[in-house]
Image 1 (cartoon, one colour):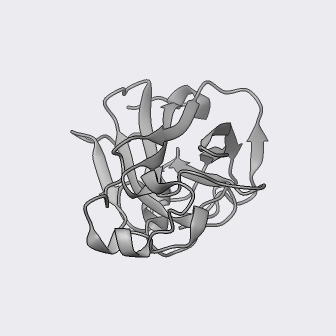
Image 2 (spheres, rainbow, N blue to C red; image 1 turned 45 degrees about the horizontal axis):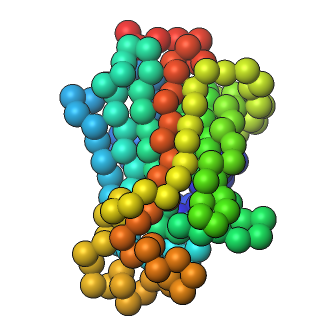
Length: 193
């Protein structure tokens, strides 16, 4: 699955990353969950090539009303050259089903580590991407990214071991790269109501 601030694939978890809670709409800032919600890639292990393969996303509203937590798992634990792992969450602050903001994280290296966190203002015209994006220079939301032992939701799936290319990083059968973002709602000029 591929995510970016401008476009998102419609396979695997793509809709889940953008939607966070329901197909076809971005996450309203005021939405709350009783417990963390984890959505595992319905395409299964290794359904997308290389750095496009997200394995799960989790949203946790426990820190509300000030913030919420979003995490993404990628099956890759090593990325080479100028390639990166990228994911964004879109946020709807006016409840029209279209993105007003996107918080994005980029990771890379061997082993994968956090490279950058960016916040974008969107033009409120698309529900599946941050259209008309403009970077926001100063913000309080933070993200980290690192390889986490035992974090692969497909570790016990037999098809995972057969399809996975772990020639360089054999632990990617059990481990994933995990990005964790603390989303500060004040970055969007709003708080949960």
